[in-house]
Image (cartoon, rainbow, N blue to C red):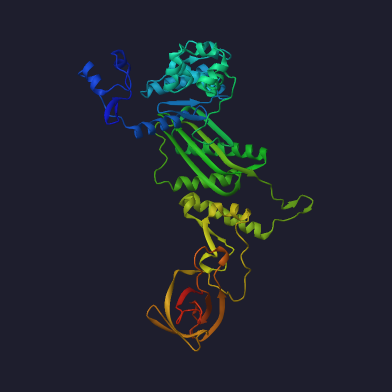
Length: 491
């Protein structure tokens, strides 16, 4: 493979036969052609390589949820507590290598007690399994590059005759730290297990997880749904034991040919009822534009839960008598949240919105549309003051125009309500009028010039239609004829 570097093509990666012929990465293509005129080269595609590596990482989730990307051509898996599911570390490694080789990949792997030791043995050693406590013996004969240090520092160490890990491990530490930096010794200590080194997984670790493996790939829809329902029941028991509910659920379907399909649902309130979870997944599956294709079958299905919160049970009544019932407002809010969850599962979480009241008198800023699944959380954080209580005669219309529309108004006195107005080429007579409701500019929240003061009026026609309009500005405030606008219509 070749890629452009500083205007010239250079080798970026090569196979074993090319290495045996004396070629190496970063060699200029012209030099390689001079050595081997019939050399076959293909221009690299970094974006496609990155996408392929991410696909392999998704496939490796079948072994552990802690999978991290390692550069452009490697993966790091934390298999702590997972190896016994496959019959031990050797069986897990053998299964992983065998499956990937069947897919046409050439690879080398190592298993060790520390990520740095496994990285060094895999890339600069023969691979295999490093027994616990033998990291030092496995790393000593390897070059210093096995510690993951940059080329400039490798060159500096080589000038002092320090070319292998054993040369650094047996030298006094203080002079090395002064000359090459403390992080060189930190890399060594991480590899030998003296300092901890954590992986950064590419996907967040779920709070709870349940999975089921199948000896024979599962390809029938009925069996897949039945297996998913069993996982929902198991996950519900885990959450109940922890006294929690979850807002995020993700089902991962691992196909036997290596493809992975994930389906996620989101809830506005913590859930753990398996029937509710199953209903949301059913709605999600029905709304898929690309149906779930089992191919040759799924050999693993995993259900995980995230964003967990404490979930207290509602006490409706005791066996011996009536208990404290849940308030009607809470029941209504819960019912509305269930409707929002169902709509979001079918339409997408960003397509279902609810309104939050805002601490302002300006009508167009009095309500903020937010995703319905975030409404409860934002309300609990105090980001939404309570809505005004219901009144016999609404003071403001429920729906405003997208933008206030200019109108022509005739008023008896300059500051009084209109007696007639023209809107959308139609003339409207005013039988009754109420107002004004004066709204001044919010000087504490305005950085530029203040907006004119508005006077709002509720007006009614003889046939009963009611409108909400305002005068934008006051007479005598530097505006000879303040404009009028239509802002809303009452039902």
